Image (cartoon, helix red, strand yellow):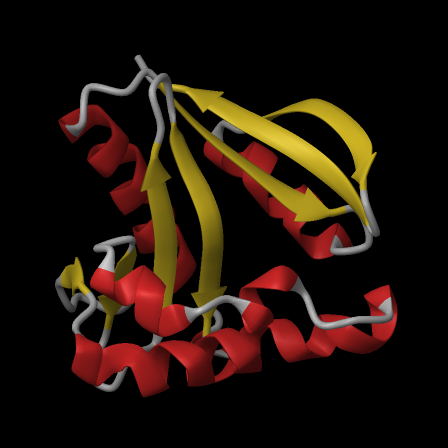
Amino acid sequence: MTSEVIRPATAADVPAVKAVTDAAYTPYVARIGRMPEPMTADHEVNVAAGKVFVVGDPVLGLVVLEAREDHLFLDSIAVHPDAHGRGVGRRLLHFVDARARALGLPEVRLYTHALMRENQKIYPKYGYEVVERRAEGRFDRVHYRKRLD
């Protein structure tokens, strides 16, 4: 398991944020028939807005978070395929919980594309429950939430 500190991304991290995101999400392109939204995100804007947190040197994984009025939205989580099995994703998900608590938010919400079946096996292991599945434009999404104690 990696023990590096999870820290806010800086402008110098933007190329790594893009590279890790692309590496993590590229396997889904053929399955869902398009690039997943995280691959088309404006990483520079997200980093500048303080939404991106990274782990590793070089960057092995990241989360993109957005504090909302009543929850923390986990917009994206990405772990470089070379780092799979090293606890990076687990550490990032625990960080998300801690961040929500630090912000005084009672829950974390996220969604994943319905065809990203691997994710639907992972999130319940970390306390997330399915709220609903709904089509939003061209995307078929499964929405999750995790209530924090």
